[in-house]
Each structure stands twice: as C-alpha cells, then as structure tokens.
Length: 215
Ligand code: DX5
Ligand code: ZN
Image (cartoon, rainbow, N blue to C red; front, side):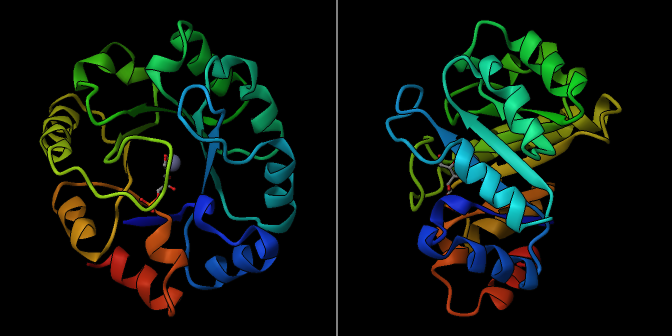
C-alpha cells in the first residue's frame, strides 16, 4: 500500500521540517485537507499553505477538497501543484463538471464517499475517475475512530472493480488509520492509506510508515 501522511496533523510552525521528515521516512504522497467551515465544521488550510507545501516538497500531492462549490478552486489547486484532486458529491451540484475540470487541467480525479454515502452514488461516474476515497470518519477533524461499517462498502467496491475491468482505479482510505485498521484495509484491497495523527504523533515515523505499509 502507498502511504499518504495527512498534513492536517503536521506542526505548522515547522512545516518545512515535517515535509522533509515524512519524505525521508518513506511517504509516497502528501494528503492535503482543504476545509471551508461550511461543508465541514472546521477550517484547515488554504492557498498560501498549499503554496508553501509545493515549494518545500516534491512528493506527489493528493488534495482532498472539503469545501462547498469546489469547482471554483480546482484550477487554482492544480496550478499550485495538486496531482490528485478529490471532491465530495454532496459539496456540488456540478460533479461532472468538477471531474472534467480536474482532468482538463492535468490532474487525476477522485470522488470521496462519506461513511453514510453509498457506493451507488459514485457508479454513474466510476469510469471518469482515477481514485475512490472511502472516508472512515466523518470529515472535519483528525484523530477520530475508524468506522468499521465502511468495510462492507470497500468489499462491495472491490468486487465491482474486479468485475468491471477497472483495475486502474485506486482505492484510498482516510480516517482513523493505525496498524490494526491498516491491516483491515490491506485485506480489503486498498491501494492508498491516509494517516494523520498516527504518523505525526509517532516517535519513529519511518518505522510507523513501514508498519502501516505492511501491517
Ligand atoms: C479529516 C481528514 C483526514 C484526517 C485524518 O476530515 O480528511 O485526512 O487528517 O486524520 P487521522 O489519520 O488522524 O484520522
Ligand atoms: Zn482527508
């Protein structure tokens, strides 16, 4: 599995060091959570911090937009270095347009499913996306507990991927990842694990990343 540290849990007073630290510890990509205080009840980071992240890290950037009307900001985040851009279907009435915008601006497109959002929601768009993100917490904050009922949806999706020749489609899990829940994800064919608190609270980040990758 690929490991994507969630910058939300970094120490913003020494962001440059934290970016270098996760790179040397073996991170595969950076997960960047953008929140607007509207779509989710929290505000995280925005354009200036995204700029700083791009300046100080050459790791691929996986931008998770938790904002209303993401279509207004997709192009900007890609200009600032996003390689993947993921949107929530509930945040826009222009989902198809969002996916198109992401791809025409040269990034890979993802859809995020909240714990309560069914797989059916994404099926009409499944051939248009590169990444399916399973939220295993309600979005807004790091440090929450993995919601186990989402595993059923992962199984359903992995059967769907297998039977519909969608092997290029990546599955990502976000929320409550630790060694135990990473194992569940590995068993259920997940390709990318996002981890905020487990990685940034670890005393040995390199070892923690290795453990998450091979739980
Ligand atoms: C929350 C974010 C997550 C968060 C995960 O809405 O999408 O990426 O940082 O944090 P942990 O790994 O601590 O659950
Ligand atoms: Zn996220």
